[in-house]
Length: 180
Length: 102
Image (cartoon, rainbow over all chains, first blue to last red; front, side, top):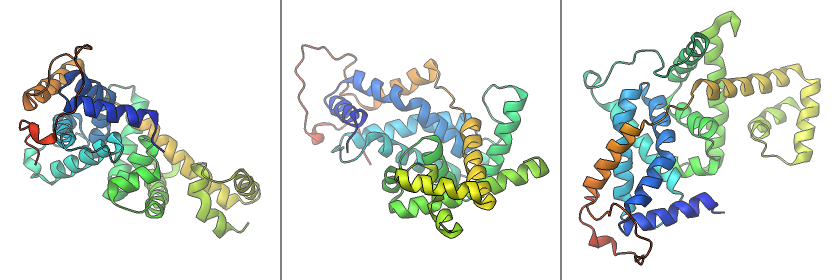
């Protein structure tokens, strides 16, 4: 069941533990964009996501010192990322940047409009729905991987995913009103 | 197939997790049933919009280097380069105190 990427990650983790900085750099650059994107989506802004990024990798590499390659490194990394984001969201509001309500990426007007609508629709969903949608439909983790990350069963994740897709569709319809 | 059966399997259908035969049965149902066809199409559309809207931001080189410097400081056992001639031996976890794992 282990993919080539997973076994390669496990080898890199072993090299990191042996003191190979190059292995740490490879693991970092392999997943940095995806972790930043995931954090930005959960947190709603890039600045907070950039701060969380270092925390995620530091925690991940700390964990690597006791890592036994029992699960996929990527799934484990995203589990840490989610926990870091939840911690961040629990911090008092004044200590965090206010959400601008706008995406932080450069794009044309139509794209910005789309992203604002989708972000707003996404934010209206329960946290569990957001998480499962982002992990399954954006990051393309399998239901089994997400179940491991969230300590849920596979059928439970699939059930949440179905309800989350329907909730997102309904929220988007409301965002766009009659135009949806 | 009845609508209720199709709805139960729609998530698996979207993720192409069904047998070819079952996929075809659902597709035949979707051709005949406007309500289920709308359900399938609108869910897929929402998923596509989500993917389209959450374009991946890139980690800048500057940010990446900053994080890697933090990693290097936090884990003093790391060597800047990995000379190929150096034999790879896995140390015991307890040999590393710099990680400060919590």
